[in-house]
Length: 129
Image (cartoon, rainbow, N blue to C red; front, side, top):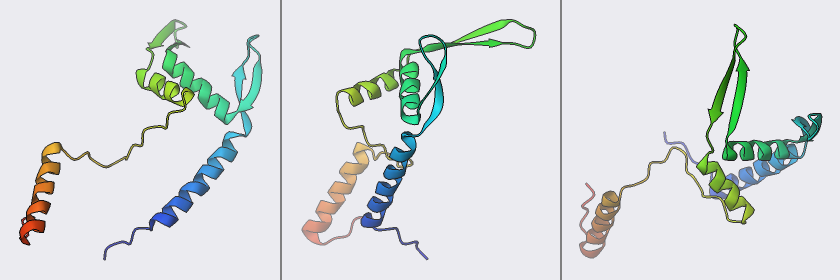
């Protein structure tokens, strides 16, 4: 009843196909941004995302008009994680791999697991239960 996971070759191929399509879609010129004169100009999705990343990294303010006509300003502080991501990209460092959904194993658990494995290997005794 256990589901068979796709092997590494299939996962790698699927990842390559996904990356290919993401790159192609990123090159589509479908997004609008304001130029220096306040005019809309069309840019690629990749450029729009890059501009949004810079905006988040540097912080920004949003002005909204309420129903009663008053203007409310909301300030978003600079985002340090986005700054680090941008600097890593600019300097050519590989992005850190994140494994969503996996909990990091504690040091104590790693040591216990290692000790149990060594005892098992040394004496042929199964201590894992």
